Image (cartoon, rainbow, N blue to C red; front, side):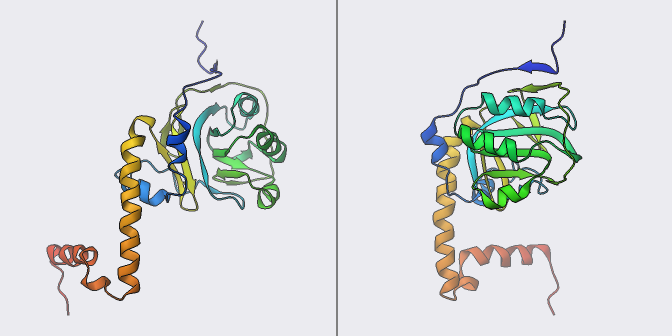
Length: 229
């Protein structure tokens, strides 16, 4: 008998904690620039409360539409520092989490939620340091009929997410990092951060139009063949 749609994997291999933590504080935009700008979730998935940064390994949930039974189970199974990433099929009609689940997750030490769907009880999120990213808000609650999977590959915000992928997010959005890519990507992202510090100084000194950074703009304008009057 097929168990598709009725699978729960209680654990998975997590990346080294030091490797994950090394990405803390690096702007998501800088990391994205080092990944061909291909691994950012849909822009509709935004922070819902006052905490607008998130980092940790992905603990994945594939949910039936409008149902949060396995989302609740995932909170019980997840480990401190995990990010619960939920494929709620982008449904905008029924929330799949609220304040009781936020409180449960905070007690468990979970880093936060990323939900391809909608949530409720956002007043709680405005008052507490718990990160939740979602497509929107509705007061209409979920069902608990079941079907779904835990810790299988999912789609969230137009990105494939594997259990154990590194999730990093800030005010700009959510990014997915494969653990195998992370060490080299970290080096590149840190180099971008340092280069942008140099650019900041050039702009502050009023020298941006004479810089190599702006030279690229001028060269591209010339290459396109614009007529300038």
